[in-house]
Amino acid sequence: MASDTVAIPEERGVETHGIERVSPTTRTHVRIRDNFTMWFSANLVISTVALGTLPSAPFLNMGFWDSFGAIVLFNFLGVLPVAFFSTLGPKLGLRQMTISRFSFGWVGGIIMALFNVGACIGWSAVNVIVGAQLVTALSGGAIPLWLSILGIAILTTLVSIYGYR
Image (tube, rainbow, N blue to C red; front, top):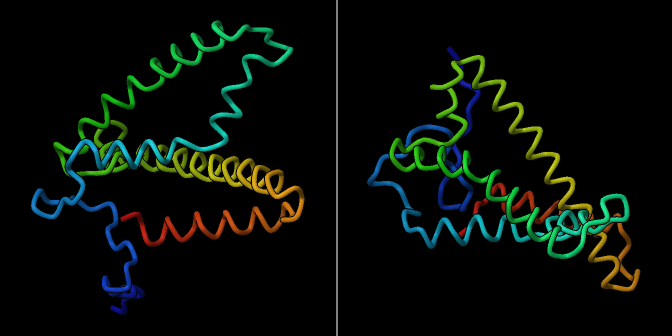
């Protein structure tokens, strides 16, 4: 039986891990600080600032403190299930999408993975477009929007291929 897989040499720096279990001896980012910096930087993007300004939009007519309270409250409520399920990853050595198979079964896990793919592509598009608009605005229009989108998309793709160090 022929194999269509290609071995990727690790010395090139390409991320080689898939969804398989990571044994405790091969885990590299086990400190809270490592996880904090990764998730903090992933969520510290201009689109979250833009979305945070929505409560002050004329159609909602919320003041600063009402907006601040709503942002804090709904972020707290939204993070509770995510925080609970992320405690299972280090214990089991599995990624979240793999763990979902235990709750939803094989087909349910595929459905959850498809939702995750859609969310990742959607948020990547939002982040790339809003970031490109910021680059174009900061350059005073010297860098066209299409070039900003292309540049940020290429950088995002490189990080997804090579991972972060």
